[in-house]
Image 1 (cartoon, rainbow, N blue to C red):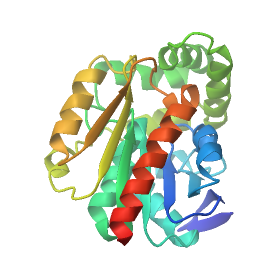
Image 2 (cartoon, one colour):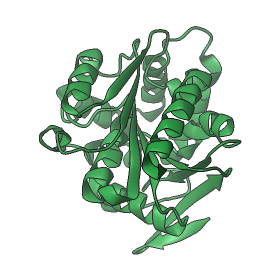
Image 3 (tube, one colour):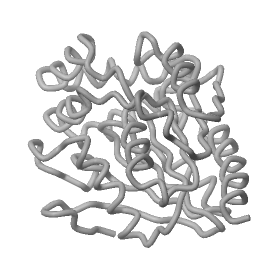
Length: 263
């Protein structure tokens, strides 16, 4: 379905039914499709909702309108449009910051928080600035480099191609702007105020950030009661490379969290 947020048309989808709802937030310049394998596994037992945030997939926001704040507003608008009262929200990669910001803003709407290979600070680094610029000036080879970095797992060429195709539709200018929209975001001072069950899933082979493993341990220590699950054989995008493992972890988390919220 499509709904309007101001002058922006937002695309969202809903699958399955069940006692609880999981809303997946795709990372950076990826569309909802990166959640598709996990959604397929979860939808027989849970309702799952995906959407294209501003600038990706079918939500083609103008480049100048893309911002972290609008991403948060878009997520909250999807809950309204899809008739979601309460849910577990799961943020991937850089857009874990969007999921966390939404929970901090309207905690009454969320029963649980999941962060998948996510980060909520450290966006404005020299290597990230170079990456954003290379998206604008050398889009295709930069996608090749990024896909190789995301998927260190063996026999993942088909996933690399899938990811490149998804990002290709975003385009160079939007992809670069989406990255730059997070510059200045640092949610660490607010994480201690999260009073919500939190699951952090992270691929131990993640090499997208030089300090990925150090950062995820710090992230887990800053969120009260957070559970950290490291996937030893996964890279930056286990939603695609290890969907069965991620779905199993989410299934258990949803079952426990929804039971606590309703019981």
